[in-house]
Image 1 (tube, one colour):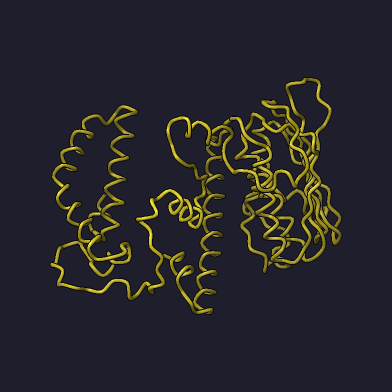
Image 2 (tube, rainbow, N blue to C red):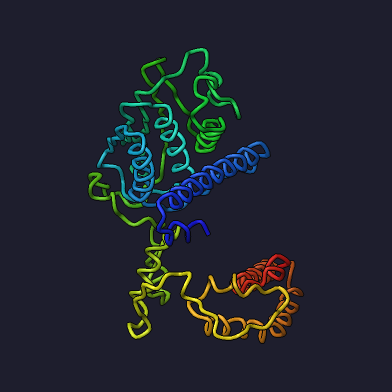
Length: 360
């Protein structure tokens, strides 16, 4: 709903409020994810899952995210990437990305002005099948006192909290980073000079899948953000197009416009609040809010058709749910039942059947 405000509001102040909501939501999500990770670590449930990944895609994700945050603070973010690093590796790229983002986020947060540098080098390896990678994150920020270094990776412990009270954070990022590196058979090394800056480094060994060098940064800054081979596999199965997660609504709209027959498209500049004009009296139905349902549809005819189809399908859907319920206890049974319930919940929410949606 906040995204709708960002897309449709013409008032500058309202759009700014919505941007603040978006920023706060992302911060809250980050905190929740950190707390969940800490909980998994304490219970020994945090795991590393190795898979083939494109090192260039990982770099693009990380550098794009940090570059934006650095620009907001008007500090310089630079990268020194060894162009001989193999293109495709085997490892847990999700955890590696999480480690780099944690360290770089901290570097940007605690650098009022100056430079944050990400260096990644390819070290000599005893095996031709193993890539030894050296990661170094350096900043010209506020630095850390020597007596505070031991507090750095303690959960919920923030260094010089009074001095840094205006910098948001929970003190979980470094603790999670340390634990993740331990799972990856590595360790974090820290060097800091108070008032001058900090330097964090670690090494990782990754199995080489494709030894083709990644090349210079300019060659891969805009490469696809997708698991290696995923797009190819989907296309071979008959899919027409591919969008990677997280889904960008504007990319999705552009793709829909590209794939739909042109006869089904029409340009409109009609304001959203005048698009739905009631032409007849809608019946009162328990659980339905016709005014809210209008938000999801371009016209009332489509809305009415959708609601009618949903109502007429209820008996069939109930019978299918009963059948699927009997198979619960098996992997396929659990998955099929959950998929059906999720589908019904989305349908109910779309037609504004709030009661049924919540019950599902």
